Structures are given as structure tokens and as C-alpha cells.
Amino acid sequence: MRININTISGLRSLFLILVLSGFSSQVFANIVKVKLESSDNCSGQLELGIFVKSSDLASTNSFRIGSSSIFLNFNPSVVAYASHTTHEFSANTSTQAAGANWIDQSLGADNSHGLLNIVMQKEVGGSGDYYLNKTDWVHIATVTFNWITPSASDPGIKLHDKFTMFNAPANDGMVLRDLEDFPVASGWDNCSCVGNLTLNTVHPSTASVIYNAGNTINNTDIINSGATIECRAGNAVRLNDGFHARPGAYFKAEIAPCTGNGGGN
Image (cartoon, rainbow, N blue to C red):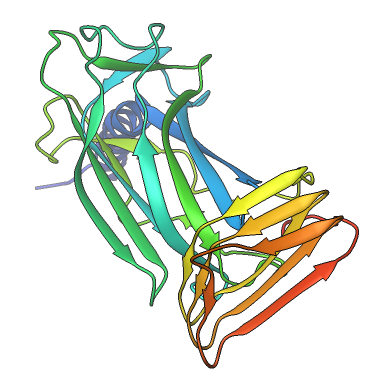
């Protein structure tokens, strides 16, 4: 029996075309674009806004998403996780009932190794779903970090490429939306000097923060051994009742022009 080589070659080409066509329709249909916006809040903290929308590469203009996991890496010698807030989808991008939003399902924060995982679950209460489109950036969460080394050039905050995922509305983790890329935090050197600053923080032994104010700093901090805290104000640094620098801590107060908190790029 003779085998027609041209026929086999043609079948192979047809098979590859079908496979690639199916692969493309699955991979490029629903793609999530993530944006990280960071800013220094001039109180020894870095605030990170997390925004999402449909990627311009997606084949559809809008699609639905369900529960999601945001996984961040950061440099633990520069910043430490402090808190976060999840935000409701806007009226443009949600058909949920009023007040139904993403809620915290679980949180894993490891300041020793620079790992943060926020799992957000879709709240019960609406009959619709959350939509992403190519026009509207949806602010889904704000994460606050404490500066450990505010003069450092990079806090190393980036979206993890293995564990960040956005589920389809089924929320079973079996059907995922693709991500266009995995951004890093940058551009946070926008801290302007405040007139007056009130401090009431318990600083861990790893803290190293410089506080600045154009006029007055009122301080009731507790500074643990090993921490380095400096306060610079244009007119006065007041150490009020409750302020305590423990043995082994470094604290410095001085009258000097406001120069911001440092850090950023």
C-alpha cells in the first residue's frame, strides 16, 4: 500500500491550523490589564492603588469576572505591609445590586519574606456580574505599606506572575481570565510637605523613617529598640504625653526646612 506524503502533510497543516485557531480564541478572548499606582502619603507610608480593565488585546470589548486573587511581592527591607481596603465596582462596570462589592475572603501577609496575597470574593446580594471593559479603569483595592527604608530607590512591589488570578463568574477557580502583563510599582515621588503632622505609631525594631512637616509635628509615637525615627519640622517638634523611645532606639528631632519623606523615583 502506498502512502501519499502530500496528503499526510496537508492533514498535518490543517490540524495545526485548527489547533492554533482554537488556542487563540481561548487565550485572547478575555484578558485582564492591571495597573499599579503608588504615592507617598507624607506620613511614613506608601499607598498602592490596584486598577483593572479589559486589555486592548482582548477580542471582546467587555467580559465578566468573579472572585480573584491579588498576589504581590515586595522588598521587606524597604517596606512592610500595613493594611488594605477593597473597593466597590462603579456603576459603569457592575450590574450588581447597590452595595454589593468585593469582600475580603482571606489575607496572607508575610513581612519577613515580602509576600502579600489578597483573595477577594464576590459578595452575595446582586443578580448580575462584574464587568471589565476597555475604557474604564476599575479601582479594586488600595494597599498601604509602611516605609522601612524611605530613602531606598525601589520598594520592589510587583504583581506576581504565578499566583495572581482573576476567575470567571463561576468562582470555582477552574476557569481563569488571562493577564496581559505583570506591572511593578513606580512613580511615587509625589510627596508634598504638609503644614502640620500628628504621629501616633508603634514602630517595630526594623523601622527607619524620616517625618517632615512645614510647621509642626505632634508626636506620641512608641519607638522600639532598633528603630530609627527622625522628625523634621519648620517650627516645632512636640513630644506629647504617650511618646516613648525605648532603650536601643534612635530618635532625632530637629528644626529644618521640609524636604519630603524621600524614596520614590
